[in-house]
Amino acid sequence: MTLTLRPPPPLAAAGHFGPIPVAPPLARALSAMGYTTPTPIQEEAIPPLRDGRDVLGQAQTGTGKTAGFGIPLIEAIDTSQRLVQAIVLVPTRELCLQVAQELARLGRFAHVSVLPVYGGVGLGPQIAALQRGVHILVGTPGRVEDHLQRGTLGLQRVRVAVLDEADRMLDVGFLPAIERILGRTPADRQTALFSATIPEEVRGLAHRQMRDPVTIAIRPERPTVDLIAQHFAPVPDGDKLAALRAYLDHPDCSLALVFRRTTFKADRLGRDLTRGGYKAAVLHGRRTQGQRERVLAQLKAGDIQVLVATDIAARGLDIVGLTHVFNFDLPDTPETYVHRIGRTGRAGAEGQAITFVAPEDEDGRRAIERYLIRRQRGAAEGPEERRRSAAASPPDRSRTALRPPADSGHRQRRPAPDPPSRPAAARPAAEMTPAAPRSQRRSRRRSRRRGSDGAAS
Image (cartoon, rainbow, N blue to C red):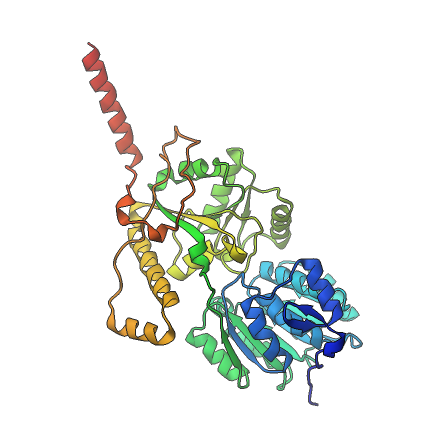
């Protein structure tokens, strides 16, 4: 049986989302959500998706991808059939909830039902919802496969499949599960793949699962990183907690996200901050789903000042009002650094990112700076210029200018650096003054006291 998308409503009966005509229920939902003007990814993705074309879209997180595929997805649903007609695969539970909530808000006046399915919670409520019937399923690959194996989910009537944050899903090993899930959908389905990066593995997946896709690559008018004031703060490992507390005590730091590399270190830092009187919470993969949902609810309610997390929060998590990102530990790769700091400076807002750099972190810091310089060059050049530059120019070894933090000794709590007037990358390297290790500072203070006592006698 051949499945085709429902055509969009007649233009005469449509409202508008900026220049894009939409059905009245969608226009009403978009207005209620405060969406008045489409973003570039939405303007580029909505027309070909409406036409039934497969779409391969490259855009950073926070650019409006969910509404970009969500609007044509809502329009394609036949609400008279209480069957799964669209599936959206995402890499994490948090993103699953976030995408499902966004689609539910878009489809509420069109009476489109959306169900998130993910691990860490009981199957019973999800099975009951599937038995009642849903139109759009948003899920993590592991839990979707679980339902398929149990026979509680059928994908035979799926018209559209969306892979969101595809590069992240492949990074964590979901490729086999994704291909098995897509193999349970009709061969003539429409497929949309969205990703912040398009490595070879993602291209291979697109080649195998998509038919003549329309390729969309959105380069922001102003790259997200340019909206973020970046500071690399030289801080010995033993002084990082005191330095973090000094930053958190600054009145401009209203909501902070602090990254650690392991779950054990994240838990320990969360306990230290809570004992210090901060409203802190911890988010990582070993937390139960109930704990993770409570943390997200606390964030939404404004009950948390600082969230300590592993890289599970580096992609897809949208935290409203996040002013600061702290890299307590350097990430494994420069790409992860960009995703981490991209949690702030979203939707055109400005933000601050502070990275604590111990002496043993210098190689990692230099790798990040070289990567940022290459990104800046790529944003300024066209595709042909980028190819010529890559072939002819060696990597730029100049340093991103860094700004030292306030004295991070344990005796000092309040002072924190003033917000920068320009991005860190615009400052000369001469502004960087590494902080002396704590033991050296104490030794100097003792020497000064001895000298003063001798002069007085």
